[in-house]
Length: 200
Image (cartoon, rainbow, N blue to C red; front, top):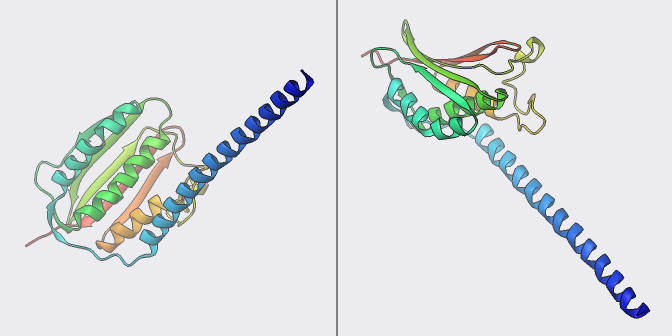
């Protein structure tokens, strides 16, 4: 009986060790995946941005992105509201790259919203530029952090890579455009992208 108890205890100890090992392997796998994603993001960020430019209506591009992201927004209790300029806003852009920049801002907005909230997308024209404004009703950004949010590897979130906004700015500037931000703590944040229009 004592031998049997000893075997049971040994088996239980081995089972516990095996469980710990499996958990550690799971953590290692997740961390490896996370680091791989950060590395891929870093390579995209530092890599030379070669644009495949084509005439594109910004309104249509934004509608595509809203259609793509609607299910994700709904699953996080985020309501999307859109207000588009009443005429086409034609720019020469790399649609895939600009969509990536927009997606980064959508994800950033969703993560800033605790519980339910709104993601507001507007397009307009200002002189020779198309404007894309992406706003949220999230927690806002503290004034002392606003100057750093576009810096590579800076993130106000514990597990953020700090590459999303840096990559977005790089893409916008590669199009000859600019990105700016306004924010109020407790009320939300608004990013504005300014992209040159095709005028011919």
